[in-house]
Amino acid sequence: MVKSEAKCRVKSVLGDLLSDRSGVIIVLFALMLPIMIGFLGLGIEVSYWFQNRRNLQIAADSAAVGGAFELLDGGTSTTATAIATTEAGRNGYDATTDTITVNIPPSTGSYTTDSNAVEVIMTSQLSLMFADYFLGDSITVNTRAVATSAGSGDEACVLALDSSASKSVNVSGTADVEMDGCHVASNSSASNAINVQGAATLEVDCVSTVGSVSGTVTMDVCATAEENIAAISDPFDGLSVPTYSSCDETSYSPPSSSVTITPPSGIGGTMVFCSGLSINASDTVVFDPGVYIIDGGSFRINGGATVSGTDVTFIFTGSGSDWASVSINGSGDVDFTAPDASALTADPWSGILMFQDPAATNSASNDFTFNGNSTTELTGVIYVPNNDISFSGGNELDDAGCLMLVALEISFNGNADLDNNCDAAGVTPIYTSYTTKLVE
Image 1 (tube, rainbow, N blue to C red):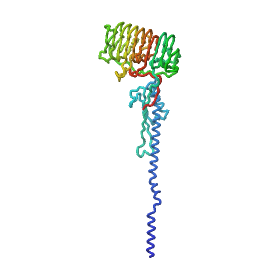
Image 2: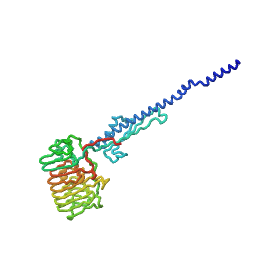
Image 3: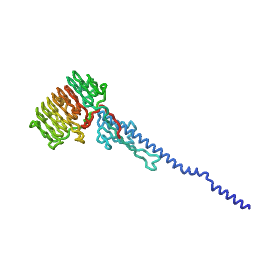
């Protein structure tokens, strides 16, 4: 009986011992603690990666915007790259651990053909703490940003590029100039950068200038002139004269009173006139679609001539002291239309009617002049970056829907009627203000 009770007590004690779980949690916690600390450390490190990547992205964004601003301000790709690198440094870029690549225009993405776009690619090597057990000693963080300048505000149909000239846009005499749907703009800082004098009148949506306006301007949209603005970028400064090897005609004059001129390679091709071409009074001349290069001399249309051409671009170049220019005189009837976007979708001359080589020296003999009582319908851009455009006498520019004048200085001493409905003509807009923004 006694032995039986003793056995029962022993079994009870052993059962209690075997069923006792106290202390197991401590053991499990001790086993799990390194893993928990590892996950916690990895979480902290991942946050560290994201923080560094965000900082690197801020640096890339700032660099791209800074570079785009430099281009907008007239800087070169070299200066824009330097500015981009400086801006990156101000926002955390460290040359000892990071790399930076600046591409103008971007090497990838949707803006590879935009010469105003700046692409910044940055990489950074981050040292690892906990994750080095899995990933090695470091990881590479990559960021990319693209910024560009886009036009904003209203569009100009007249832009004088000279930065300091008095009367860079001048309306004088008895001129009656009316321009619908656009601004008249001047980059001159002079107090009379845009000048209206005498009995002349100028009616336009708005006037915009780096300097000030002298005289009375009738404005249909703006309450007052926009003065002391930032200079407007030249939207056509990327164009250059195409290469050519020989002359197709020299000192050309039509062989008969009625002529159709076609490029030697056919419609849409290129034809080169050396030492100018002159169309005489009473001649009727039609230019077939194409690019016509005038090397030296003058493109002269004399009184009474009737001249026309659709989808045509005239390029004026030369060398030394002989640079081609334009002179349209007395009672002529001229009707030219530049290639539009549908005619030459990928052509750099889309929308360009007359283009003077930017290398042409500044001289009165190289100016473009429209004189006398001619009736002139011109659709497209007339671009004379280093010389002047003048309209004088009773010259009447009929309402052709789209005409833009960009020259060093522009003067009107005769009537003109310009419109700015240029979207269909494929003409690059001349915006009176620009904004720089991140686009990728």
